[in-house]
Length: 415
Ligand SMILES: NC(=O)C1=CN([C@@H]2O[C@H](COP(=O)(O)OP(=O)(O)OC[C@H]3O[C@@H](n4cnc5c(N)ncnc54)[C@H](OP(=O)(O)O)[C@@H]3O)[C@@H](O)[C@H]2O)C=CC1
Ligand SMILES: CC(C)=CCC[C@@H](C)[C@H]1CC=C2C3=C(CC[C@@]21C)[C@@]1(C)CC[C@H](O)C(C)(C)[C@@H]1CC3
Image (cartoon, rainbow, N blue to C red; front, side, top):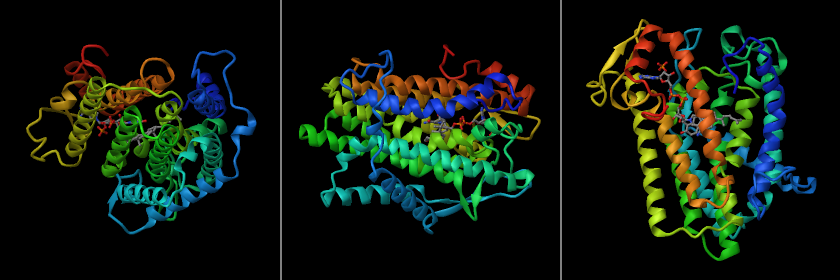
């Protein structure tokens, strides 16, 4: 995660060269640990799966089918078409807003498969080969993105990924919104195959548990329910993704391609795969407390994201017009009351509380289910610092005034 350092800084280059090798190995390592009885992250030498466990001819077929289905659903004339933010050349790109339809159709198809007796629990045995194929696909896609970016017009290039160093640019991504015709590759990958794939992997783990123990545990149901809510929320609010850093600012290279297609479906589903081999008996009181925590996290996440989106689209909207703001030299204003007056990134706070609620159903016997909380804290702290730099560059003194008025970044009174 080295964007904004397009100055060929040694550590960034080292990161850009090592991460494409290390991250796929980390996914395989985490998956094997999650299914081993010890589930120890601290074992030395680290436990890696035997090569025979990495391949199954069914995996590339399933993956290809899944991508074709989602490309087809993306192109279906369902839902509305929305415009992205204004680009450097003054134009706006059009995006289909039909991700929620894709989720509903995918879940419908899965239920049909279950009804037809297809053993979805077999996904548990296919996880490693599927992760290997998804990694292969993200490499292929990244090579295509890197090479095709040399035909993109200068205004279509991303601010961070054009240093001239091939390794770094391959990693960060040279082009901002690579498209094949009207098909937007970054937008498609960010929200469809990987994110909905995460829900499918989780459901597969739940079905495996049903096969093994004649029923789904409360812990597994909670993990599935919470993460389904998160994905459904992302797709229900799909239009808001058009204003996130990833779409507006970042190039599409290996990091996002691998993140979207392999990291999200296989590393974000670790709690569910852990629970298949490490059942947890959750009491009613603990379950209620965890549901409450997820509810509070979700409320903060959704309300703060929506408040900013409404404010950015229409500052006079009745739900935000009474909030206190400060003016900036760009003409845009910054919210200093409401959610954005509590901390400078209330949406990250909500997301982190949810992350904790997804791990707690797995109990405290192992560290592995908490990997997501740790990784996500590092990702969001780094992302916050990156956003802060961009906002200071954009808004100057007005940003400093905002920071003085709202001193905490993510956790009130802590950070
Ligand atoms: N599950 C996952 O793996 C991940 C989830 N996320 C989630 O994605 C969501 C989006 O996050 P992200 O894209 O990082 O950025 P944000 O949605 O936090 O947006 C940051 C931008 O908001 C605007 N802004 C900041 N402060 C204010 C203010 N006080 N008033 C008005 N506008 C303000 C600025 O843009 P401008 O002024 O130009 O409008 C700033 O650049 C978050 O909820 C995050 O938790 C993110 C990464 C990974
Ligand atoms: C270790 C590694 C390869 C990191 C790459 C980071 C990516 C996994 C994340 C960068 C931003 C993301 C977002 C979401 C998923 C994870 C990635 C791709 C997101 C789609 C999750 C759902 C949310 O509601 C969201 C739509 C706001 C979010 C957008 C950012």
